[in-house]
Image (tube, rainbow, N blue to C red; front, side, top):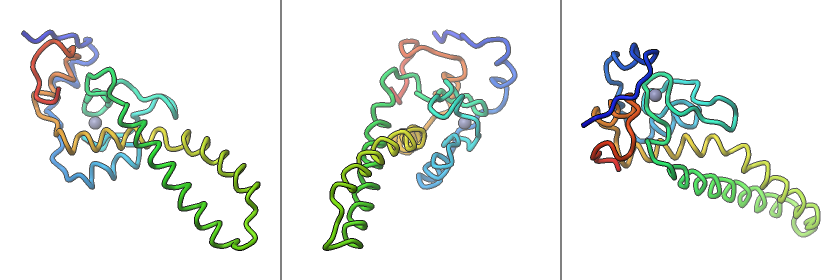
Length: 161
Ligand SMILES: [Zn+2]
């Protein structure tokens, strides 16, 4: 049995046709890098720079796909992205300044960039992780209806869980 928990204000959106994306992985990731919903391309996913809304205001996809530990993958994405960016920046800086590399300056600047990079890349990591997950586990019409109805993880068997 499906339990419907949608608020009356959600009735209009739930009555709209399903918006299940059938686009390529590159398009999903492109939308994510623009901080848009990878599924539908809709915007306004963030309440603030660091706070994602619970669901896409356009298509109704719950951003965490109903899973409490969903964004562990986003943290991994964030770490990898920042490490790669810094790796190439440091290598370029060492190459340009060789043999008189200011190692002390490089150490302090790198530490500061590491912290700033983690903060700046954080929202991109979250949307990109959602895009990669949608590419691996595509959203079905059934799952989207489940998201829109506000279903709990134990409500029913879903192929994505
Ligand atoms: Zn959407």
